[in-house]
Length: 64
Image (tube, rainbow, N blue to C red; front, side, top):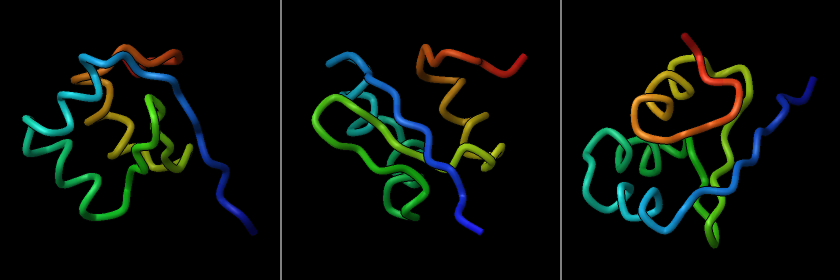
């Protein structure tokens, strides 16, 4: 069973958050998020990661 990956384009300002925000840095270091050329990728069913991302980024399908 493969876990689906979710890819989202993010702005330059949002990319910069990954260099300044410890929670976002931890997601990258824990390999929960892959950051590539203005895009982030993460496991669609990882609700904890999605919640953290929703606090900082304007992602479609935001959790309420």
